[in-house]
Image (cartoon, rainbow over all chains, first blue to last red; front, side):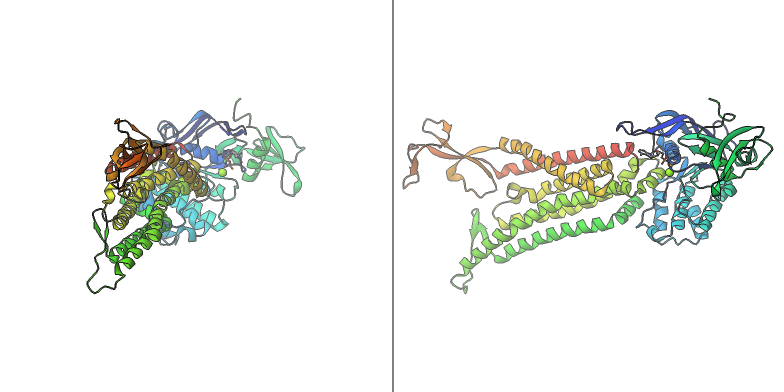
Length: 291
Length: 318
Ligand SMILES: Nc1ncnc2c1ncn2[C@@H]1O[C@H](COP(=O)(O)OP(=O)(O)O)[C@@H](O)[C@H]1O
Ligand SMILES: [Mg+2]
C-alpha cells in the first residue's frame, strides 16, 4: 500500500458549485465541501439523488468547474491542468457509457489509443476472469457486464485514483458483489485510491473503508466506516443519552428512532441508520465539523 | 493514430458507407452520362459540334445524332451536375455532424475524455480520418463532374469554363469540406445529432448566400469587354451586359435606342457607325475564381475545425 506523501490523493477546499448561474435557475449542487480522501482507501460517497455526488466526482475529472474553492487530484487542479489530472485518474461515469457498436476488445483498443500506458493485458485478464466475451458488442452485454467493462477501462489505466459514479446502480445483488470484489482486489493490488458514489448503501460495508455522506450538497459525515458505525447509538425518540443527538428519523414501519453520537446506551447503530440519521439531520454534526 | 482511425471508421461505419455510396453513385452517374455523349460520336470543331456520317449511314443519320445529343444534354447533364452539387455538401454535413455530436449525445464522450489526457488528440483522431476519406470521395465526384462537363461541351476545356462550376472541380470539394467542418462544429456546440444537422444545414445555406455575394464581386472584377462579333455566347464565359461603342469612341448602353443591322451586319439607325460590345467574364478567369473560392472555403473550414477544437476543449462531455 502506498503511503500518503504530501497531500491526499483527492482533496477539496471549500468547494461550492452552483449550476445555472447564467440562466437564472440556480441549483446549489455543492456547498463548501472540504474533503481529504487518504491514500489507499476505498471511500463510499453516499447520498440521495441530487445530493451532488456526480458533481463532485465530475469535478475531479475536470468536467465541472467549482464555482468557488479548489479541488486537487494527486495535488493537481483538474480544471487548470486537466490533462495531468486525467492522466492520474480512472473514471467510470454514471450509466456505463460504452460505444454500443464496438466490441469489448475494441473498447480496450480505444483506451490504449487514447491513454499512454493503458494496460490492455490487465484489463483483458480481468474481463476473461468474469467470462465477459471480448468479441461481443457492448450493446449486447448485460448491465452488469457493461459495468464491468467500464471498470476494466478505468482499472486498465493503472491510475493512482479511481472515481466511480454510481457503478452499482443498475446491477443485481450478485453483479454488485462481483463488481465490488474486482474493485477491492484491484485497489489492494495497485495501492490506488478509490472514491465510489452510491445512493444505496447495500453491499458497501464489505468493500469500503471510509464513508462520506453527502446531503443537499453538504458533507454530513466523513469518517472511517468502523468509526461511523461504532460511535453511534440508536434509541427510541423519547430516550436521552449522554452524547449528541443527530436526528430523529422514521425507520421502517413508520416508527421513529433517534440517532446519537454516543459511546453507550440504546443499541449500536447499523450503517443504514447512521446514513439515514445524518441525511435527515440536514446539517453537519457539530462535533465533527466546526462552523 | 492508425488505431484511432480504425475505431473512428468502425464507429461511424453506417454513415460513412452511406455517403460513400451517395458520392460514388453520383460520380458514376456523371461518368455514364459522359460516356453516352461520347458514344453518340459527334466531334468538336471550331467551338461547335460536327457530325461525321459514315458512308452507309441513313439519310437522317446526323439529325438523329444531334437530337440524341440535345436530349441527353437537356435531360441528363443538368440534373446529374445538380445532384453532385447537392450530394457533396450533404455528405459533408452527414459525415461531420455525428463525429463529436453523437459522442456527446450518447455520453460516450465521458468515457473517451476521461481516458484521453488530450481532447485535441481525440478530436484529431475522429476528424482527420473522416476528413481524408471525404476529401477523396469528393475528389472523385469533382473529377467526374469535370468529365461530364467536358463531354457535353467537347470544344471547351472544363477547366476554362464557368459552366456548371458548382457541380465539379475544386469548388465541389471545398463545398463538401466546408459543410463537414461546419457540421463538426455544430455537433460539438449542440451535442445532439439531429438539432446540429438542422442548424448546420441552415447556417450552410446562409453562408452560401453571403458567399455568392462575395464571389460575384470577385467574378465581375475579372470582366472584360469584347466585340460582339467575336462572342459566341456558349464558350464557358459569363455574360454580364451588352454595351455599345459609339462612333465617338465612348462606351455606353444601347438602352432606349432604335437600331438594326444592314446586310453586311453593320449597325443602323441611331447606332449607325457604332460597334456592339459584350461585357463578359471569360472562361480563362475560371481557374482564378475557382482557386480563390475553394481556397477561401478551405480556410473557413479550417476555422470551423479550430473552433470545434476550442469548444471540445472547454465543454462538458454531456
Ligand atoms: N448540468 C447541470 N445543470 C444544472 N443542474 C445540474 C446539472 N447537473 C446536476 N445538476 C443539479 O445539481 C444537483 C446535484 O446533482 P448531481 O451531482 O447529479 O447529484 P447526484 O449525483 O448526487 O444525484 C441536482 O439538483 C441536479 O439537478
Ligand atoms: Mg449522480
